[in-house]
Amino acid sequence: MASDIDGVLTQLRKGVLEYCVLALLAEHPSYGLELAHRLGRHRVLFGSEGTLYPLLSRLRRQGWVDSTWRESTAGPPRRYYELTDSGRTALATFVQAWQPFSADVRTVLAGVDR
Amino acid sequence: MASDIDGVLTQLRKGVLEYCVLALLAEHPSYGLELAHRLGRHRVLFGSEGTLYPLLSRLRRQGWVDSTWRESTAGPPRRYYELTDSGRTALATFVQAWQPFSADVRTVLAGVDR
DNA sequence: GCAGGGAACCTTGCACCGCAAGGTAGCGAT
DNA sequence: ATCGCTACCTTGCGGTGCAAGGTTCCCTGC
Image 1 (cartoon, protein in one colour):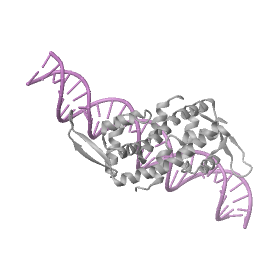
Image 2 (image 1 turned 180 degrees about the vertical axis):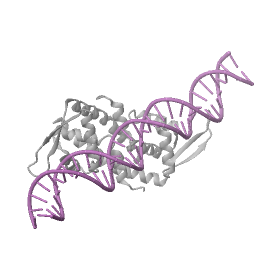
Image 3 (image 1 turned 45 degrees about the vertical axis):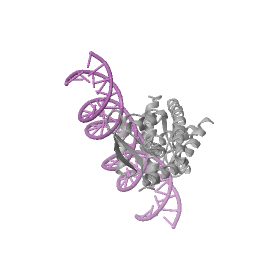
């Protein structure tokens, strides 16, 4: 369909969501579902949990985050994630790539209206 | 590696490149290699020809572009692409998705510096 | 004329990422 | 005891860009 905005957004998130999670963790540590809610506030950024948990596993494997289990006052224990130094470096690299990239996209799209 | 900017850009292009091509065709029709050069001017947007030709086939299949062969003054004939009406609609949809998306990403990344 | 190089097109196999759907377990309240 | 919520995770799939390689055509230089 021509007006399939969801499909467009799904593709846009690729390669971006990962670093949005890092950016949120840079503010303060969180556990999985809390991240989902924080992402959901910026309503364009989040699709489903099925995205988030594999993503977090990847970040752990790459050494960009550390995780620690903590008991919850109500409900099952939670796994809290926090940024490592190399995670901070990766995030900085992304920011440096994102800025010129989004600027170029805006330029190309701007030509459309003329 | 932590500073693999190319890998980051490869992922960023996903779901964007397609519409950048549509945007360029909205300005004026082009053939394949010409599109490659026009994309290359915005230096962050283009990877390789191996991306472009499958992408153009997809756009044809979806009915977002039409193509016509024309003789070249020097060299083999060229296949020129131009936007269809439904291509224009798809591009407009993308623009409406891109604006809030990129705004949200900027917001999330802005929190990093604090 | 014919050999080389460049323009222009295309295909194949691959890797990555987000998503939908489904699955497990613990705790609290009715 | 059962229902429902929180919280975690896994499997299979589809879409997209990329690297490498291949084909055809034309023009130019020897």
